Length: 376
Image (cartoon, rainbow, N blue to C red):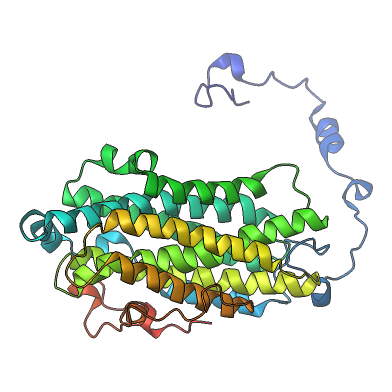
């Protein structure tokens, strides 16, 4: 018998007592299950029509038949975009940071990473703790399990960049607590997350379901669909000038993941709306977008008190407004910022570039990049 406080302790005192001679067969027979013990009532087969995104009554452990085949496609595509931070050469970035970046550019670089390090942990906690356990179709949960892994991978990528460049990790990781413009965005996201982490939230009530829906919309459309998507662009602007190319390539692969997270989230939201005959509160949506814009404006002004070559706070903010309109259209709701124009026409290219060489000229020779994926 194992001692569970010290499993490797196999002292004689933990050995079972010797059986009384002649009782072994009777003890074995008594321990053997009978037909009555093992018999279980037959269950009705799972009907695909009974599956639901939330509040479903079918067996969550039965993957097939699919009702949401699109969710399975997301999972398959996500696995084609596999990568790790160690596959990307960061040598030139060290030289760039030390010898080529201006103080203003270092400020941008450091604070983009300071925001992202905390944000991806929030995204991971949202999917892993607040969303997955509420899903009642396994094909949705399986993609979201991959999404949790990807958020952890992204966090590793930021940490790898910070460590490789030689930044003060304690100082960078604490900026979200001491820089108001970064802390404000994190506070908004924490509020949305905590609203659905409550143990008493009930998705079978209209109030609970709508609260969950608004939180899901925030994380899919705003947090990942805009704040992340737009948030990588200051680093991409450095890449376009031949600077910090290793970090930018890390962010390119992260961006491809985030595009899928956003698309999957918005598709799931629309499915929940359709299955529950919900009407999205347009006033609440407008308030959400305006709050997000206000926070993004403060963040851009902090990042770029003065423009750097090829990038400014004004272009960052206008691009946020433009991408927000795109996410609203994907959701089937009114554009929050009519008339917004694309200020960074090169940004979408970052999620669609094909590599014409072996993956970053490293050991990997057979690698399917995101440029070859189908973005549903």
